[in-house]
Amino acid sequence: MENRGILTVVSGFAGSGKGTLMKELIRNYDCYALSVSATSRAPRPGEEEGVSYFYKTREEFERMIEKGELLEYAEYVGNYYGTPRSFVDEKLSEGKDVILEIEIQGAMQIKKQYPEALLLFITPPSAAELKERLLRRGTETEDVIRKRMQRAAEEAEGIDQYDYIVVNDDVAECTELLHGIIRAAHFTPRHQAEFVEKIREELQGNR
Picture (cartoon, rainbow, N blue to C red):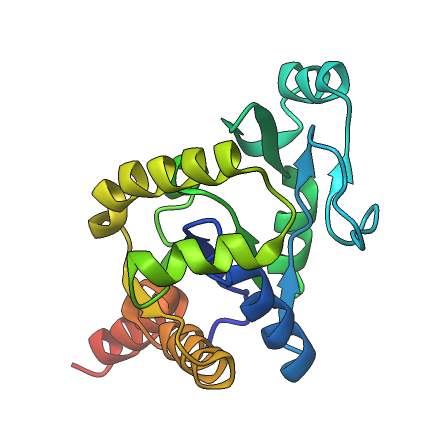
């Protein structure tokens, strides 16, 4: 059976709770590696360099783009976000399931480069709940919240590009569901290509 990890892309509306879910997956299970993205936005209170993000100036980020150091990148609400390439390939080779928490534009870029990637979309149970979660953050202005809700409406048009939709109504239950989906993906034919080829050859040899 193949030991290579699965690349899992997790997207969701801002305020859907996807960051909390990713932290719970990492805390509860040791088979995951959460990719740390680079961003040109300023740190929020409590965020740490190299843990939450790699914080870059806009100029530094654009140099990373030019050098091809990013697996994907996108500009979102005036800031760049992107995934360093080397980390992902290294962890997949180690057998870790690498989780990329990125928005929908980046997810589509990843799907082109890694067709076997597993795409999951996190959503709250309703638009009203989404707005309430954004308000509870207390870190964004009314104008930013309005823009995030507008962006969510645009992102909703691309949900059908994902493999699974997960409604985040209870963090513990949702974390367990995500883990189950990712573990099950290891046993799909596209992630067992070497085993499938091996058993085919053995059967041909016994004809």
